[in-house]
Image 1 (cartoon, rainbow, N blue to C red):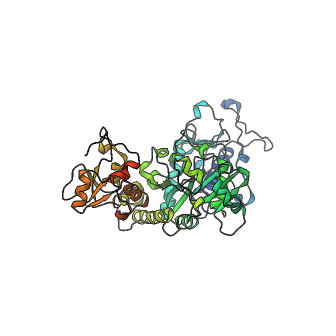
Image 2 (cartoon, one colour):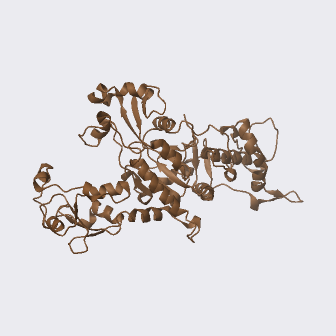
Image 3 (cartoon, rainbow, N blue to C red):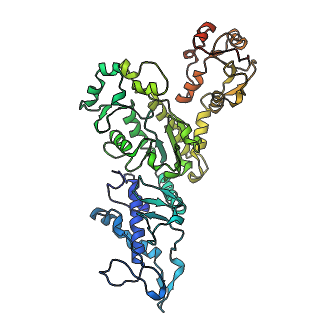
Length: 489
């Protein structure tokens, strides 16, 4: 089952705010198919194939126009646009009966294929026509060529910017939700009756039993309000490495009214590269796309678009999956706070990014602006004015500037260095037994654990340093961190 074809299809130029993006492509396909069929000389109306004269040496072409879902409501909406489209692609006939071919759209290159047929000329797809990207989440069997994708993206971006919207790509697991299989439920969770609680039919519930999939799913606190407010600023996609059936089930939980996502639910079968997510299957420009995901490595080509989310671990199995032995939120009968949890925090960040991008005081044209530069700017404000020195945080055989935590600090706007001086504001250490740690205490500088940088990175603001104390040398020893190979740097 797909969410792709559930409503009538408008044309690209007449999309309203509430139109499903899948309708855009459905209308485009229907018009292309109609143009291909109507542009041929008319013969016996009862014949299925449209045959060309043998003298012209052309093969018969059968255009399966009914491959695109049609209904009376769709026809009413797009029927009036057919004549205009035909005029654009049909050649004109002059007084002598000859045609002016300069207006005809000629294949190849083919704009795309639907059900194995080019939706312009009707030619069957062969091995030479495998370029482009499949958009199975919109319509099964749909593949768009590069030029057609560029055309649709250009139109989509124009419409979005006109409506003061950007594109928001949302991961599911550990970002908006947390799921676990029934056979992975812990004994403590069983004793607390978590499965029974998930099966209760309560209003505004956030814990669900996906019986057909033998899974429990917990919505992250604040997710419904997050989606409601984000939808006014962004055209939203779901993009998960889970399979299609799972993605659609979760979409129904998050968007029961089908007002936020429509067909824009992308799963692992839609990816063009194994174990990687890419914006090539999103019909929105990279310059307008913001990504929320808890996993950075799946976005190797789009790290500048990414806002890394703090993972949501509600179930015990989720913690174990990532090597944690702590009791889970479910076992503690606790949860993130809605008011200042991860989604509420990131919503504020998204509002700021949106406001900066559409700032009317900027002279640059909207079409020339790039949200990646806005993300970079907002991120650099987090630790602006901080100067950090690291002491015994990295192994002695590693170059400090190449370490992830050093790079994160710089991305957050901090200045990182190797030696202390009067301008240093923070000393980052794993324990208090180093010369630089003692210098920080003596000179009343902030002495804190590297986790402070990680937390600031997730929360997008400078957190109180007092919440990240550095343990003493004895406490450090309990953490089983070897110092023999380390030197004070």
